[in-house]
Length: 322
View 1: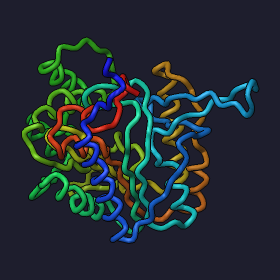
View 2: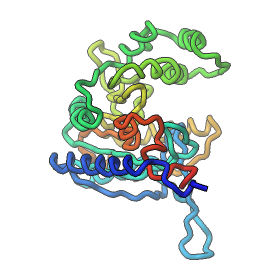
View 3: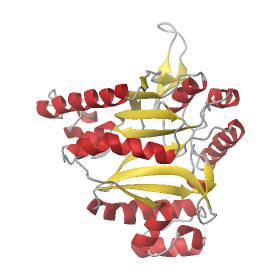
């Protein structure tokens, strides 16, 4: 049997090491501190659509175990460092997500995440472009709003239609029987099943100003048309989602409201009720500086740079060989 061998070629692993070196040099030149936060946490991510991997930790051999969680992102811990006065920081770390495996997914993967006090989302987008253009050999990265994206590919603006219109539009493209009154469910289906496949023809595009209801941990603001939107953006390269960034929420009261809302949604979806990281709320109460932050998939970045078709071809051992 040959399953002892790496899933990626040694040449691709050398290029992986070169990419790691390039990223670290990029941030060193810009005075951004590399940090290293815990992989295990007492708390889990609140997002209903991300499933944490549980760990049974025992203080001593044979002792009763307690539940810990492998990080799905270093975001909460890094924001606590920001509140403690770290200044600009970045991290390349292993993160873990349950139930995610395929050509573009592995349950253990490498995420690059960084935070820039004093930046807004536009400033951070400029820096992302500076990072990825040499790696992907791009001349330019298109920028478009979420509203304009839907208008370009589907002929309507999400803020101008009602739920019934979204359902009807979705069923024109997808054969689906679903009873859901949340507009975002239908918007997400249209985005993932209709728009993203068409983005495969676009070298690189950054989608900005997501609907307010999809703010996640971003702040909200008025756009030029006076509509409240999320200060959130996503980068797609040839149809692959590569990065997700925010002009970060710093309001502790609103942060707690969103964590509680996620927990209620988890209950509605019959998902496990896991401990929320209230220390993030405590950190925001003390005061996290205005900043922008982004998470970028390093394995996907390498996959796209080498024009490989699967993450297995750019990581040492994918799940079946781990």
